Length: 134
Image (cartoon, rainbow, N blue to C red; front, side):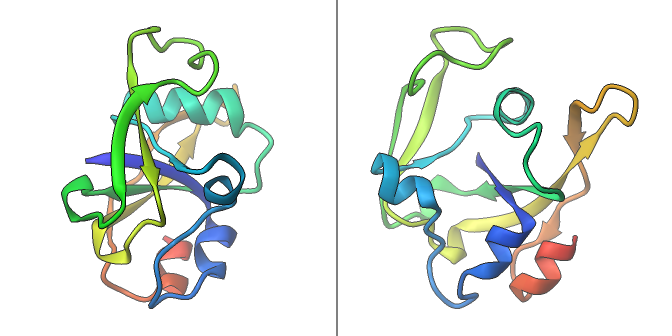
């Protein structure tokens, strides 16, 4: 299972019956993902501190993707706390909705403002508006 971080608004804004194609797909040529929860949290804390909330982590079954998923070195330096040899999943095409098996909301420490974990998974087989509110 790989993780993709997205704002709830961006997730809800795309057609619920089509594949999900974030801005990074056009800009970078692939969808940025993380190989596990600790790495995804490091990404959130390094790059999403000022992003609109709520933030969501899409849990993606890479075996269900129709786009190519390659595990590659970080695009630039890895976020603080992530070893330089960690390989990141880069999906070279949109994320198939059927590959998104759960959606989890990023949990925040109210004192430090840092991401500390993900909430309980919401099944990804409901409508997107409902998932975005999870």
